[in-house]
Each structure stands twice: as structure tokens, then as C-alpha cells.
Amino acid sequence: MYVYVVFAHPSKESFTWEVLGEFVRGLEHAGHSVEIGDLYEMEFKSDMDLDQYKRETALDPKAPVPEDVKAEQSKIDKADGLAFVYPVWWSDCPAKLKGWFDRVLTYGYAYLYADGEHVTSRIDVEKALVVCPAGHTVEHLEEIGIAESMRRIMINDRLLGVGVKQAKMEILGGMVGGDAAVRKENLERAYELGRKF
Ligand SMILES: Cc1cc2nc3c(=O)[nH]c(=O)nc-3n(C[C@H](O)[C@H](O)[C@H](O)COP(=O)(O)O)c2cc1C
Image 1 (cartoon, protein in one colour):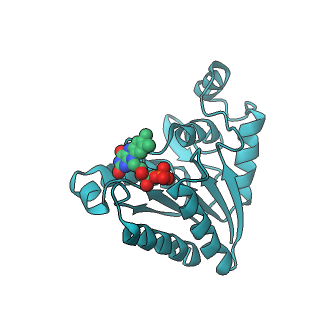
Image 2 (image 1 turned 90 degrees about the vertical axis):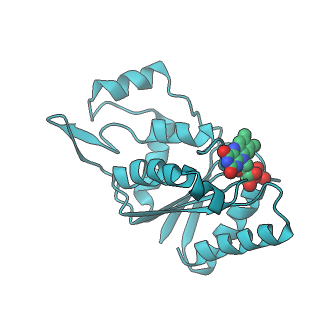
Image 3 (image 1 turned 135 degrees about the vertical axis):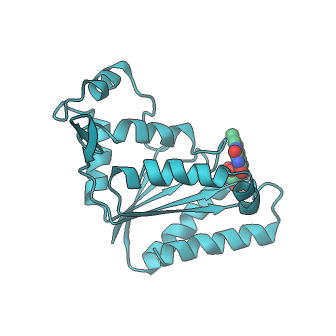
């Protein structure tokens, strides 16, 4: 498969960066071809400006989209699979990636209405995987309902809701105060997630 991996973390000394490395190593060992979209490195403009806001709310599917948005949409068009690697920040993805969804999932591309109903998407991606390191343990995030809310928003709305056929989230938890064993286990998991993508 051709897999487009969207990465959102400002630091190459972070745990999330190491997770990206192991995940991509797993993907490549399994024979997938990989393209990485490092949103901070490419200085992706994450804020929706007035011009694009007007474009999105005019509901004209043929209205032109900004060049940087078009470039991301072509990467999605080439991809059989999508992956997202980012740290959990305040129970969601970093704002940089939230802005990627705001701007790249445009009207006429990711969704289209007919008679007031959401009818279709041009996105044709077989599967997506969301891999996100978190400070809290997975058990704690499940218990307080945050893991479920993260899945509903990221998986149900932003991925399955725009035409991706299958999508899953894997939280690599327990990183705040986590010992070397937790770190090692999470990195091994990241590699396996890539290998079994
Ligand atoms: C601004 C910020 C917000 C965070 N919010 C959460 C959170 O809501 N839930 C959580 O489990 N961990 C949270 N964390 C912890 C990170 O998800 C965790 O440390 C993760 O392993 C990323 O580490 P890294 O920055 O070394 O890649 C937060 C960290 C930062 C810096």
C-alpha cells in the first residue's frame, strides 16, 4: 500500500518522533511505501483564514481551494492508507493537525450536500490508523471517557465520516512518569502497528 503518514509534533527529540520512526520502520518492513507529511517542518498553515472560511460556507463544490490544501488533497488521493502520529494534547490532537482537518477536508472534496443532506465524499482511502502517545494510561483515559471521545471525534467524524473505509485509534499511554519499560513497550507496539498495517 501507499501510506501517507501525517505527523504533528514540533520536536525531533520527542517520544512522538521516536514513535514515528518505529511505526514507519514497521510499515517499510511490511513492504508499504511511505510518504511523511511533517506539518511543523512544512510550516503547514493551520488557521482557517477569512477567504477560505467564505469558500467553505458558500457551499460551491467547484470553488478553487488554496494551493497548500490542494497539495495535501493530492497526497490523500494517491494514498491507499492514511496514518496520523501526534501527541495527545488536552485530550485531542495538536492545533496544527486540527487545522489540517479544518482546511484540507473542504466542501466538494470531503463532503457534499444535496437537499440539505450530507451525500458523498471524493476521498477513497481503504484504511486509516491514528497513533497517539499520551501521558495518562490507556486504562485511565478509558475510565474517564476521554478515550471514547477521542475516538468518536477523530475516527467517526474526521475519518469514517469523510469516506475512509476503516479507521482505528491506538493510544500509546502511560508516558508521564512512565518508566523505561513503558517506553519500550510503546515503541515495540508502534513498530508492530506499522508492520501489521
Ligand atoms: C500541551 C500538552 C498537553 C497535554 N495534554 C495531555 C492530555 O490531555 N492527556 C494526556 O494523556 N497527556 C497529555 N499530555 C502528555 C503527552 O501526551 C505525552 O507526554 C506524550 O507522550 C507526548 O510526549 P512527547 O512530547 O515527548 O512526544 C500533554 C502534553 C503537553 C505538552
